[in-house]
Length: 114
Image (cartoon, rainbow, N blue to C red):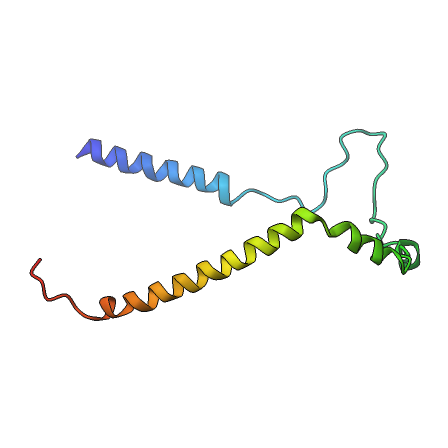
């Protein structure tokens, strides 16, 4: 019984000590002094703002959009779309047909013994 009592007492004392270290740390009311003495002390920070919108605007000439459309069109890209899109549509329709054909098998319960 003395061993159990010692164990419980030590555990309670250890819990109190760890809780005091973690939860009851003292918080200073003011900031500590700077580490280096030659640093100026900052009373308040300067407000930051974004630059004016007129300085950030980039003008795009009207004929630039026509040039970019011509650059985007390429033979390989067009061929890939012309070939790939019908194949994707065909696969989608085929998957829908298979799903519709297999739906009755899913809905009818199997009467076979397991």
